[in-house]
Amino acid sequence: MKLTVLTLIVAAALSVSACGSPLRQVYAMRGYSLTAPDTIKHVAILAWAPKSDPQLAELLAREASDVVKLRRDFLVHEAAAMRQTWAEACRPADPDSQESLNIQGVIVVRALDVVETEGQVEMTLEMELFRCGDGALVWRGEAGAKVDPKDEDLKELTRTYVAIFEKTAERFAAPAFVILKALAETIPSPFLTDDEISQKIELES
Figure 1 (tube, rainbow, N blue to C red):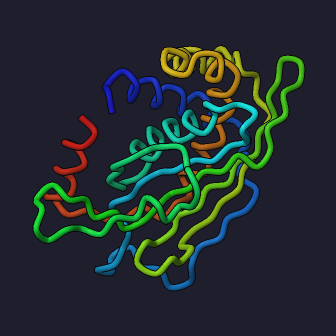
Figure 2: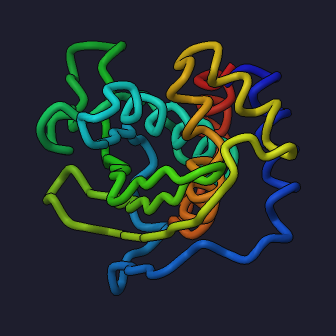
């Protein structure tokens, strides 16, 4: 993740911390251990949104990836719009290839509701963490908020996404960030070894 984006996300996160939490409900798998050998560390992030705005899913995937990288200790290898199902991102490691990825889990973001009114966007997002090995739902959260897309505290962050997603980001980057931050901060974050920390730093540089 580029330093500029990281800095803007930190600043934006601080600006919205004082606001009421948009979190509505959370589910976590009973007995899931953050230190077990099968703990999910390597993930892909996929997003789904209604076809009314073709770029919204891509924007959500990119923003979710940036927020998860900053707020949690996952190693994020991919962020993309979901084509069919979350399982399409699961790829076991190839023992014969040094460059093969071992995607252990998939974080899925879904836009459940997006309503634009004059000067406001009311958005509800769902975020889920699935385990590739057995398809288990490890964690799920739902959050929603009504946010001014031109929020002064988020305008610089919004500008970075506008450079890529143009009008879609102008409309949705700010409300999506507020909601994604609340969701990401409740995902069970894995404990990384020193080697994995180095790998995460390299992956995000």
